[in-house]
Image (spheres, rainbow, N blue to C red):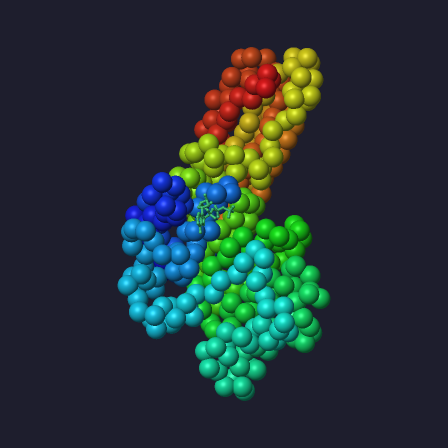
Length: 340
Ligand SMILES: Nc1ncnc2c1ncn2[C@@H]1O[C@H](COP(=O)(O)OP(=O)(O)OP(=O)(O)O)[C@@H](O)[C@H]1O
C-alpha cells in the first residue's frame, strides 16, 4: 500500500545540510495501523509528508497504491492526494467556516453535487459524533471536537489511507483515548490504512499493529508492536517502552528490602499464554519458598497478555534455586539488584 525503498530527504544548502530522512525502507500494508515513533527532530513529520508528496524525496522510491508517486503528473498527483486523508496536531481547520463547511470543503473542491455532498457531510458528522455541532465554528469547540472535525474532513472523500501527524499530542489523556478509539473505528469500519507518527509510546501500544522507531532520520527498529515491546533491541526503543511501563521499584523500597535481607528479587516476565495460570501459588506449594509480590503490571497488547512482576523469593538457598530452575521453563527471569 505504501512502500519506501532507500528513501532520503535532505534540506538546506551544500554548506548546511540537514539529513531529515536517511535511507529509509519500510512497508505499510493494506488495512493496518502503522506507527512511527521517535523523539523531536527524528524525521517523523518529513517521512509522513513524503507519503502525499508534501515533501519530495531527495533519493529513493515511494510507491503508494501501486504507483511510484514522484513520477506522477499534476493531475495524477491530485487524484492520489484525494485517496490520502491527513490530520494534524493543530487540527488545521478553517476558522471562518462552520463544522459543516469544513467537512464539505474537500467535497466542494472535488465537484460533488449539493445533494450528494449534504448526505456525505451528515454521514461524516454522525460517524464522528458531532451531529449537533454542524453550525458551530471551530473556536467554540474543544480540542477533541476539533480533531473529530479534522477526521471527518479527512475521510469525506472516502480515502484509502489516513495519515496522522501527532494527532493526539495536543489533547489531554481522556480526549486522546477518545480520538484513538475513533481511529480504531475508522480502521475497522471503513478499512482505511492508517500511518501515524507520535512521540508517545502509549499511542503505539493502544492502536498500532506495527511500529518503526526513528532516530536521526533512520529507522532503527521495526516490527509487530508485541514483538518490539517484548524484545526491544535498541536503547531508544527500550526508553520509549519504559515510559509506558513504569515498572522500576523506588530506590527507597530497594534499600528497605536490602536491609531486611529476607530473600532475592526477581523480575518475572510473562511469555505469551502463561499469564493467567496460577504459577506462583503452584510452585509455592511444591517448595519451601514464599513469594512477596512487590510490583505487577500485566496488560493486554494486541489481544495478548504482556507484562512483568517483581517478586521477592523468600526461603532457603537450595529451595530458591529449585524454584528458579522450574520457573525458567515457563517464564523469563531476571534478577533485580538492590543497588541502583
Ligand atoms: N523545511 C525544512 N527545512 C529545513 N530543515 C527541515 C525542514 N523540515 C524539517 N527539517 C529538519 O529535519 C529534521 C527532521 O525534522 P522533522 O520535523 O521531520 O522531525 P520530527 O521527528 O517530526 O520532529 P518534531 O516532532 O519535532 O516535528 C529536523 O532537524 C528539522 O529541523
